[in-house]
Length: 128
Ligand SMILES: CC(C)(COP(=O)(O)OP(=O)(O)OC[C@H]1O[C@@H](n2cnc3c(N)ncnc32)[C@H](O)[C@@H]1OP(=O)(O)O)[C@@H](O)C(=O)NCCC(=O)NCCS
Image: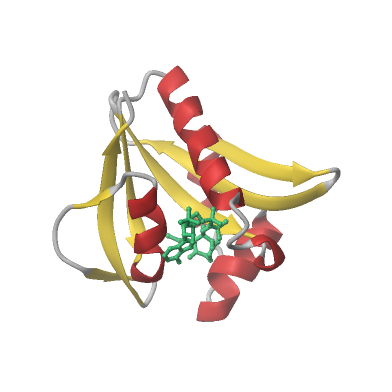
């Protein structure tokens, strides 16, 4: 999963992961979409409050982008979050992916901001 996240999310920005980034993920829900042994997409759910979880590190393998896999995995992640008792999903979405999340019912809240050198929007969706 780290290899996929590096390839799709970090390497293009010249960034890596530190142990401090990864250590808290022990408490997260890690989700992967596999074909046989190959990981094709992944994301992470992080609890931010009893009602709310945060979608992070959403990445689809280059060769599978725009095939519907991202949407299928996000719907699956929402079901997992709902089953775990969360009522709301939030995220810091890259501006380039905003349209993808909007198609899945997410709404922008607040102004554009910069994170990991890229323009982002805070987005959210009620999942109950
Ligand atoms: C953004 C990403 C997660 C979307 O996953 P995907 O599998 O490519 O998207 P899907 O094929 O499931 O697309 C679902 C719908 O969203 C649209 N869509 C996909 N990516 C989009 C984008 N970047 N901007 C606008 N719309 C997009 C698709 O056209 C499709 O629309 P349709 O239902 O009308 O056909 C994926 O392309 C990716 O990993 N990109 C690089 C890393 C990244 O940006 N991650 C998100 C960080 S916040």
